[in-house]
Length: 164
Image (tube, rainbow, N blue to C red):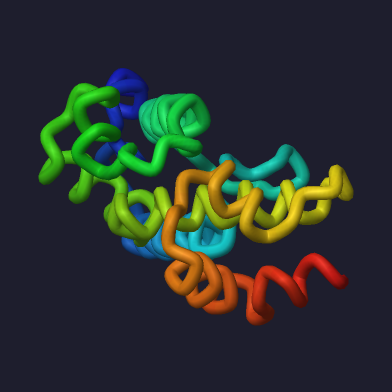
């Protein structure tokens, strides 16, 4: 019966089961889903070991694959959702559905947040990069889009973030 869990089922409850047990499992699955989406609303990477989220092997492989492809291409300003879906081997609608279901984010937002998190890392790195250099390094050409998006995610402008 554990085979179902290996193939993507979130839970398996064998008969006979208690209604109380079923309610607890559903509640735990919903809480875990909310925690995963909260994590990915602020982070594009998988959680560190100190954050306990229950990820299925299938979900973990899916997000690891996405991260690997984005990591390889994020500096390319022409790299977008279409290119990501081709690299992943899914149609754009399948990628949209799976990523939205798992992270709560649509692919374009996930990709943008990944780039902005890379920008924050570069600005924190103290390697002397200015905001414009970082913007180009993460594949965003528009100064206003970068500044607005960065402020929306971090609550401060990139130049103010640099001063922190």
